[in-house]
Every structure is written in structure tokens, then in C-alpha cells.
Length: 177
Image (cartoon, rainbow, N blue to C red):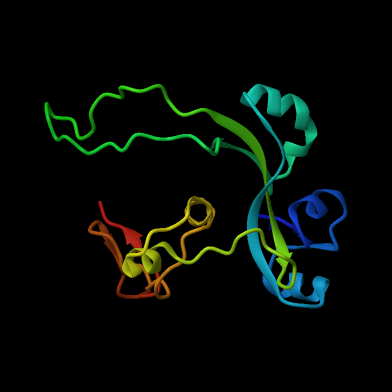
């Protein structure tokens, strides 16, 4: 399996047009940029009303795995708060309002140069919740867009219920029927 070579650039537009290089791993991106890099995914380009319109506009750009289309809720809409009901075997009530308006954007995953300016650097959601202070809408959107970060490194996976380690090769996990 071949690794995906992500562009190394200061922003998403530069990643599409003229990246400094391409790298699969952080150390390769660090060598290409000559300074600290951060892996990120940012939206770029105009918003399209339908997926088909976005595919028509971008065409061949979507052939690379580091470029993809994503549907986003348009800003400035008031979304009704819904509480779970747990009635009639259903957790959530039937939707009463029209769904929010959305748009399709091109999302670019790339190695962003660490010193490049970032639109909004959001704190982790758990830290914001613990603080208990109100959060402005732009910071809340930035929190929702950022990838989840672990509290601690992931522990090694345990073997499943129907898996065994053979006595002659304890480093192998085999399915048990």
C-alpha cells in the first residue's frame, strides 16, 4: 500500500496551487518546509448549493485523496435545540422544522507550516466545558471543525473474545472458531 503524499504549504489555497513539496510523514514535511509543520484540513474555494455542482466545478481535483467535498451548515442560522424524548422506542422526536441550509465546500488536507497564520485556533471542547463561560459562535464553529485530540496516548488493543494466542507463537493473535 502506498502512502498518501500530502502537500506542504502555508494555507489551503497554496496547497492546491503551488505547494512547497509533498510528504507522507511529519519528518518529511519538516524537511520540505524547513520549519515546524502541523497536519490540518481546511475548507477552500466557494460554497456550492449541491454536491453535483461542486463535482462539476472541481472535476479532476477530487481524484486525489487529500482533496474531498464536505457538506457544511451555512453560518447565521438559528438551530432549534432538541431534547431526547425516549418515547415509543425512539430516542429523538420527529423533526418539526426544516433542515438547516447547507453548502458543499472543498476540504484540503495538508501539512501547514507552523508559523503560518491560522484562521482561528480553538481550545479543546472539554476545557471550554469545564471553564463554564459562554463561548462566542466563531470559536464554537472552530471547535466543531477541529479533529478530536486524545487526553492520553491510546493504549494497545486487547484481544477479542474469540481470539487466542497460540502457545508456540505468542506474538500472533488467531481467530478461534
